[in-house]
Length: 210
Image 1 (tube, rainbow, N blue to C red):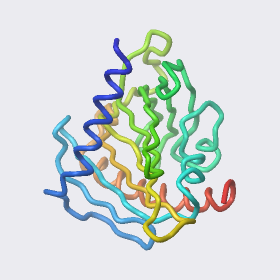
Image 2: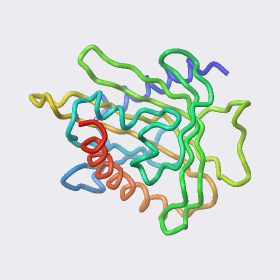
Image 3: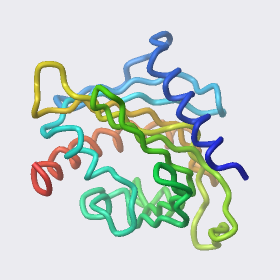
Image 4: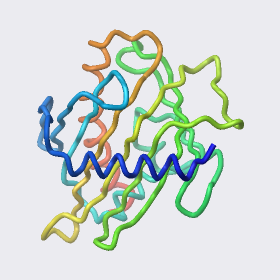
């Protein structure tokens, strides 16, 4: 499989999502994040967009998000049990396995996701981390986890205009959790999960890097 090509395709899709402002419907808003959605063009579920301002420069926020074995993500995100880099493709791209615990009062059983992740930094200081699901011979599906699928997704850590010590965090994701979950459960879980994500990440940036 051409992992680099898959990663570049995901990056192109993410840029498309950023530029296309049509069709978004607001579904949840807090002091920390605004969440909207529209039907995905990649699979039968929804594409979610989340936007919020976090304390800390983009590189500080990204330290908490960076997909690395034994990294900070495992320490602050209750929806992530383990992150493992299966293979480093090159300086910018890696194959990453993410294991999630049971959630939504155990209605959602543990999952694992296997993605190619591409990390890039733009000239304006934006740090982008984009991903999409792939297969890899060193990480086949395991019977004790439901293998979920991520369609083009990821985050943009953008320097906040006029705020040198803050970051605009823009996230897109579209995930097929797999299994036989009712759509109503999925649609309730994701907005609440994103809200908790921004809240936990804000605390993590202050605690670990800011």
